[in-house]
Amino acid sequence: MAEMTVELVAVEQRLWSGSATLVSAQTTEGEIGIMPGHEPVLGQLIEGGTVSITPVDGERIVAAVHGGFLSVTATTVTILAESADMAKDIDVEAAKAVLAENSGDLEAIAVAKGQLRAVERA
Image (cartoon, rainbow, N blue to C red; front, side, top):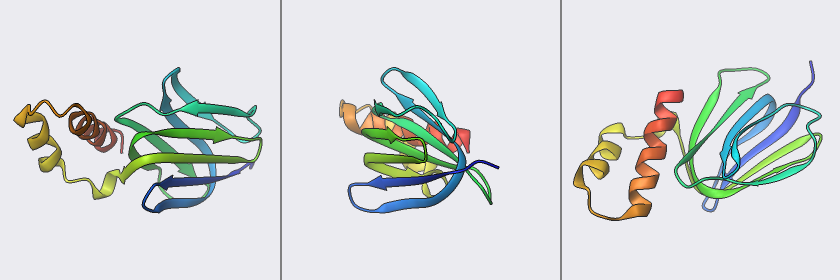
């Protein structure tokens, strides 16, 4: 089975690194799926988007990402996010509270929407 090396990194920490067979991410050009041997590409991640990784061994990993870039070569995918949260670590009630407040903080609202999307996809 073909595989590629994947790294999911946020400004403050590396969230995941390993071998995978598929990566899916929301970019400004639309959702993109990456498999081993993909043509090189550089994409900009959307604000409040999600990334899904299908590891070689284990369950699918889903993360909420807020901004950043996706870099792809034939053997590697590097996701460099401004901020990211693993779906399993997201406080759903806190994200819903941010949306309910309607404070006008567009960045906080985008992050909360991305977190809820990640939980739904997990």
